Length: 603
Image: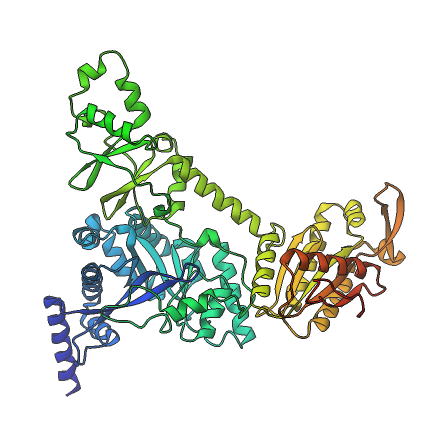
């Protein structure tokens, strides 16, 4: 009986494949900082009410029948058609195993590219989600497969990272455009310190590998707030939208309101603005077009009417076939007799037939290689921006260089290169968010005592080790769920405590650092209890062993102060701490009306 049922299921799956009888639901993926929908994941469905209604059962039977490749390929192709019919915005995420992805890398794209183009979907909007990571046995070979698809504009995402089957090696070698974190990590992360710490470490790994993240399984407001405050770019889950045959095109108003709130669920990671998959669309310049048969005189008139346009795309049947650079064209036509000779001739004779064409959904970083290539004409001539192959506008080399440069400068400004801790900009941003949320917090300013003479005596290498030790000790004693640790520069650090036991944490930092810092002194200095080095006036002076000071000021809810005022008050408390016997000065609350603290409470 069981065998007969299995055979019937196999026959049914064969019928589903032959008749292409698949249905689809689409689940939205949200862009958290922009509070918009970034794309949709296509979820395959079988005939309603049948034994094969669920995708899991269909895949199980297909594997038994040796038809899993056929089913997966059909699912991807039919999902593209359904996505196009609904005219959904953003990216389309397609689930596929390594074998299916490899089949799409065969000559002609295995039907994937042809189907997308036929239905007006740009290849740059397709994201293949690699499932069943453990089935990738030859990573080097598969990386070559991925490179072929990437050259065509198709993106790769690693699905369910952290579910026990995923591989950091796979992530490192394949260099996916996105990685999706398994729902396990975000669930209850707002109350589970260990899970929160793991999730934060995963984001640090994603930052190191320069990979944007999608967190799956967002089902509660708390899940959403943790994802947002850890710096997650994208999220997916029932709270943001359930799978549906015709999903909404916008996030619910309630969800947008939550994302806009200044209240904090946890201390955010350093801003990962370079990981937000900025697209070429941000560089797009709307410009008129000409047809290949238009006369050169007509092109001159068009340039005359649009003095800010650097080039004109030559378009035929909505498809760009060439580019005419203003400077080159006008220089050519200004030569003696050229208007008489060429004025009535078609402009196509002066167009560049091989301009750079880039889809509007392509990442800006994908164009950065143009800046380093031997062919620099794209920087002067610009490039054509397309949408599914159709003309959308132009881009200039100047705007490209500016965008790439600004992103890289911004990334360098956000973190300290020695400790990789957030720098002044994220510190200020977080103070502003705490004040906006009217959340009580304590601003602690840490500073190393006698660090400059120590650095002069032992050199920069051991000085760097001392600074990294301070950072490591502070990381150890801060609660990653709610405390924010930043590196101002040099030997100065700031911790914005939301932990109620901040006094005990500061005392623990002082004790551990002062004890472990002894390991960075030679035996002779340890025996003397200090060292001889030049002071700021150049005089040989005896200094005690390097230790750490901390001044703390508490900011109550509703305090009339700005981030600069908080920083100034914390710096004043730090100066008091350096004079204190135990190097710990805890100021009273900043007064609500004046923004100043009372120098009353000394720990």
